[in-house]
Length: 129
Image 1: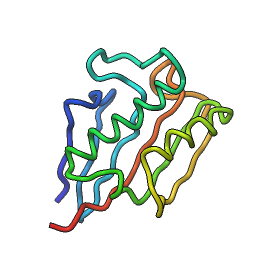
Image 2: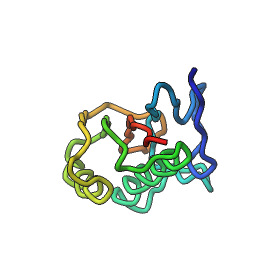
Image 3: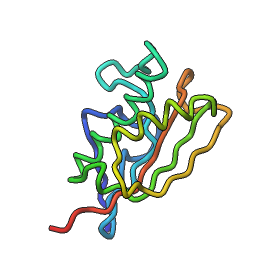
Image 4: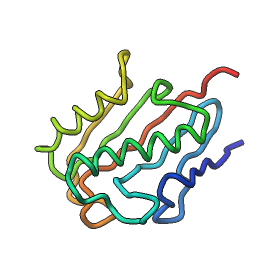
């Protein structure tokens, strides 16, 4: 049976979907943008700040599910400009330690919120109880 996971610290879903779904010992997080949940707006002071917010939002949802970044087994990143890949990797390395999750990264034409430069979704294995 699937269970919806919602964190009030992460931004509300922009459409008809859950922030995450828990099923069969895994948590599947929907893509997170660099939106500050307290304002509902994209963090716009810098690309680094917006990317950092993506990871903070993922962390909020993981925590609500009872996980940490150490439990993540797969990441999929979407960048609107592959020139931001090195910056993305630098921030990514602050949140993940070896052995790193499997990962894919793609350049996309646009993301669901105008001005968003990145979105990332992850899959995490729930810790043993």
